[in-house]
Image (cartoon, rainbow, N blue to C red; front, side, top):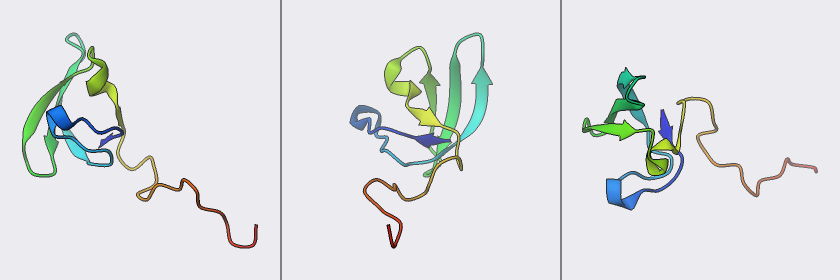
Length: 71
């Protein structure tokens, strides 16, 4: 999965990726392992922890402001 906003308090930056290790659907939480191997629990009831998207679904380079050649 990929974080979609900066969260300096949690030391997460937009574009960083993490692997989902466990999901608790009853508790609305998941455990993820970051690129550095650090594990943390995301509480999806908190807005700051919901700025995520499935990994591999978006471009690796933001396309904002780019135009196709010849357009």
